[in-house]
Image (cartoon, rainbow, N blue to C red; front, side, top):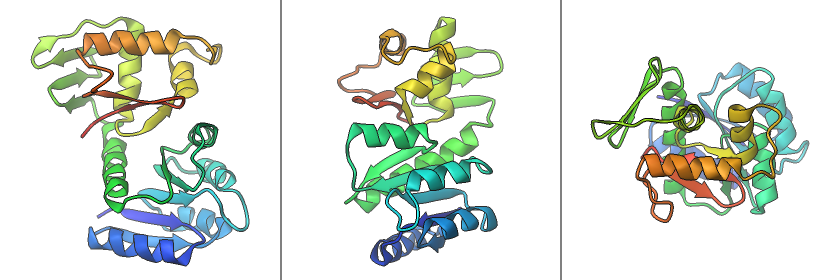
Length: 224
């Protein structure tokens, strides 16, 4: 079973998460500050990290940047901060998801499962979800057995979303993956491209099956 590292300075949160995750069969390792968390990230080789944004010795975003120097392990950021700007900053620093305290353990467990699954998806040659099948090698997409014709940009967006299924991807990250570093974060190109891709997939933005919008932050492919 997967190993999960918890980096949080609140003993009650660590205890609660350790019991909850342990009951699901996960191997749990913990650290109460940033320095120990960085060390454990390298020593214990976790499959996923739950990282508190407000640590006593250093900011969680600094811890995340240090971890990203040597590991691409999925990271869920925990925080009492709920502003869009905080979410965007954490995700742009390398977090894979962002959960606001207080949180429901069932929701957190679902997010953990999605991220652990997406880690395996990224190395796969095909992707399958709810009737959608993508052959990455041949750039071939079908929905319920019917070929879906996509432009190069539409396919690039779909591939980004599905290779990180379950993860919340920021607008700026997606834009740079598709258009490069010249992408203008204030442009409407990404919003238009998402709308076009949704139309190709017959996905209703008000009741999505595939692409979920986090207003002001980004998009997530719903692989569940």
